[in-house]
Structures are given as structure tokens and as C-alpha cells.
Image (cartoon, rainbow, N blue to C red):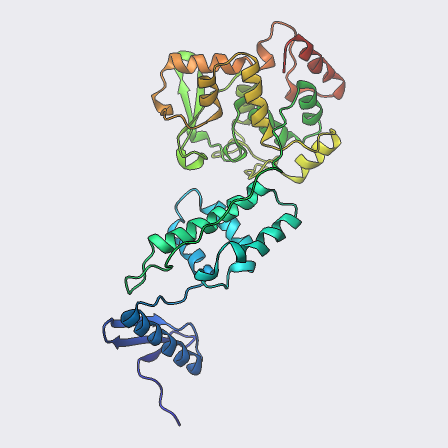
Length: 377
């Protein structure tokens, strides 16, 4: 019977073999083999000792897979806003390049992934976001991440070429008549969210995650605003949300429904998305299959521009990065912003108004559509 290689011992109820061994030029080596099989544990130890020898004597890097690097970046970035997007991309990438050594991840080995995504109908811009995650990992592996031997995980990061975004879908701002057709087909909880969105220019996640403790009272203006913390905003800056008449009406209708979140289902549970089956069904029935949730934000921006709102003010209202800190806005400045968003609300028109959310039958909606001939865009 052969002797067990020194430096291995069992731990835990599952009997996993662990390494505890002093290695010349390295010191004490502590690591789990990840197996309860002695033969596999010995093979693992032999391989790791050979890697150490090569690294110490020849400066040869231990082989690491893309999956190991992906795991590291998710752990390192777990508190960052981008981790969710990274996880989404890595889930799609793993079946194709997860098992590849880092040094074998380059433009050539990514072609299979690119072609597969294209066949699935994925747009070039989305594929580029996935490739950007790969590029980020390879750059970190070549420049920042170092192993126990002081060596970077990768010698050099290869150049990755992004795709031409010639298939990107153009924004589709809604006309008032199209908005009416779409809104009347939405269930109540979705109609409230999209009505708020098209009157504030918020992104989908900013609407679904809106919380009551973000509301700030402005007594001198007899109103309130919301300040969304930067960790919930795409550009990382605090987001000021001012409301026109219709947006405030939506908020007031939500009060008392949930102690924490503004928007909920009819059963009182918080929502997590607008782009649901009900949204997609409504846009099909309205004859607007090309409309995306994000087009509501484009609609808000287009209406502000058509009403002569300045570029600087539109930047603030749309939440674009501009270096300003929302908590430093004075009451007069907030008042000016409110005046701007009122320009895209039907509620302050001199002609008879109609709030879409309160309409009880489709016969009322053509009255809204007719106003486009009075200058609406």
C-alpha cells in the first residue's frame, strides 16, 4: 500500500482533503483541493507544487481559466452598481469561453460567441457591452491582479475590436395620440408607472425602485421632490426628480399603498419592472410593437425640447451627467425646473384638459390626440 503524499489532511463532515505544506521559496502553503478523493487530491497537490516551482524558478504564470477570472471580478465588484450588468454578460459568455485559459481568450476565440449572439437577434450594442466586460477582465488580469508569486494573471491583454452599431434601433418618441392608444390598454399598476415615467424622464429602474424615504418636502413651493441616491442612478450622481401636475397626481394616488416603495402591484407587492408581458401585449394591441420602455424617456426629452426648454435644463431633468449636485439646488432653481416640466403636462393647458389615467373609456382619448394640431409634438 503506497503512502499518502505528506501535506494532505481531511477536514469537515464531507472529508475534503486540504493542503498544509511548507514549500521552499514560498513558505507555508494552505489550500483546499476541493475533493474527498485521495488520488485526485494528490494529483492536485502535485500540479500546484509544479506551478509554484515554475513560477519561482522561471517566472511562468499558473494557468487560470476565464471562469476563475469572472468569479474574481464578481467578488471584487459585488458592491458596485455595475455588478448586475457584469453578471448578465458573464452568464452569456461562460458556455463559450468559461473553460478557456485566460491566455486563449482573444478576438479569434470570441468569434463563436459573437456569431451565436447575432443569430439570436441580439443587437450589436448589447454584444459590445458583453465584449467590454471581457476586455475589462483581461486588462485587470494583465495590469492589476497579481498572484501569490507576485506575477500578474496574464502577461498582456489582447486587443478586442468592438462591433459597428449599424443595427441600433432609433428612439421612438410617442405622439399624444399614440400615448393615448397605448396607455388605455395597460393594467392600472403599469399605467401609473408609465404615466409617471413619461412626465419625469426617469429610467425604468429608477421608477420601479422609487422609495418614499427619498421624497423631500419643499414647503416654500408647497410641493415635494424626490432625490434618488447615486448608487441607484446610471451615471452615479444623485438624481433630482421634479414633478409636474400629472406626476404629482400619480404620486398622491400611491400614498398609503406600501410603507417603503412608491409603485406596487394591485396586491400591494413592489414591482421590479415595467417591461412585462402586459406591457408587450399592450403595445402590440395599440399597433406600436416598436415602442420600448426607454422610449418614454425619449418622449419626455423630445417634448421638453419642442416646448423650448433649454439644453442645460433638459440635462438636469433627464438625469444626464453634468457635474452638478442635486442637493445644492435652491428653491428658486427647483421652481424653474417645475415650470419647465409643467410645459409637457396637459394639466396646465388653457383648453379643457383630460388626464389619461382617469379616463374610463376609449372614446375620450381622441380629444387628447386632437391637441397635437395645437403645437404638441
